[in-house]
Length: 286
Image 1 (cartoon, rainbow, N blue to C red):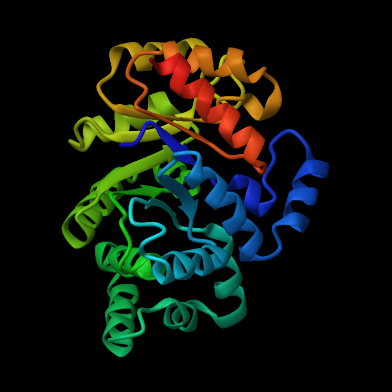
Image 2 (cartoon, one colour; image 1 turned 90 degrees about the horizontal axis):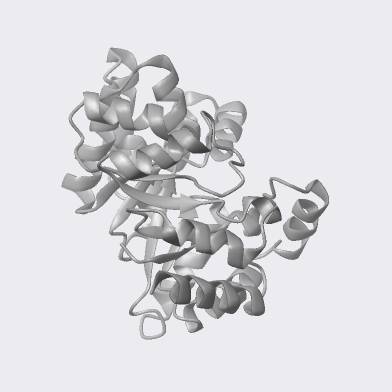
């Protein structure tokens, strides 16, 4: 994995510390053109990966990237799925089967729908999961997606109900269908590592909140530091700035000193903040 990943929370009005900032960001990034300007700033600064949700506006970004292959020849996406609000809205508006039809691939739609219908009728969870993964991946067709993440809203739900085999279902499909490595986003790192170990997923890629303040780290900072020191996995650190509670240099210095952290994902809205954060990660990782 790349050391530095560019995240997308800022594009969709997500700010865990300030609703006012979240609203301002949502207004600023009402259209994909504004997002692409910021993404280009990250790319020009040397960041080669966009770790993003499957929000409808991301499809406009992937269309833009496909339309300019020479500009983005070294650029990769790490999709994070599912985008939960999209499914909730579609289910509410269209009902389960019509919602699936809305999200099906443009070719072979009827066959996929039949497969989805049969999966629903027979409770074939693996078949339905494959169908939904394929639907989420439509927007990334033809683009480089070496790592595909399961969003924490689903990861932690499966963790909570004890349906650990679902992690294997996800991992098998993204490997076999897309040649990608599976990744898991969680808000409970120690518990997820136990679950993945139980179902035989070795050395998994796991993205979790990691910061000096212990912000949004269930179980506490010590449990996370112990996992990073003693467990075998490939960590991706997110929320390293604790939503601005820690000064950038102090925050990044802490994360860069932790063992095993392979990648750091951050989001920013300005060229200055992007360049400065990348400079700090590069310097403190050396």
